Image: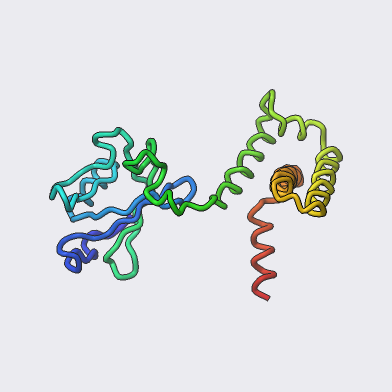
Length: 202
């Protein structure tokens, strides 16, 4: 958490900016402003609360829509004049109904790969009925490896044909089956990322 006594509210006339991100994936949800009272109420209630510069009062995000931001953690920057808040959004954050207030420039989230790999590992552990991933794990190592090979060949063929839509579809299939293979071999996706980072630094 933070040390309120160290925060500098003077630079912006009693306010500090607060960037709110989704705790599950790191996506930026919104930017708001807090005075000391809003900050204290956020910590006390566990619901992210701001100071409205237009209405000149405190407002808890979601107080009218029900789309609250539930506080998970909070950090202050090196200058002690701004905040990073990690929260769990209950519904969409933007008043337009969008997931994030930055939806117009929102790129595809690379963090989804982490979520996908976590789901595949969960399937391996629980083996729920009706899941294609469960079926792969039950059929064993050879079948999983075979599927990786098949998807790799199909990706190459799509690239040879210069079919962008097919390349995207086949590449997605390849990545998914490679994730299944990694999980079956008990190799973490983060280990692959670390290997790439090590190679990049050389």
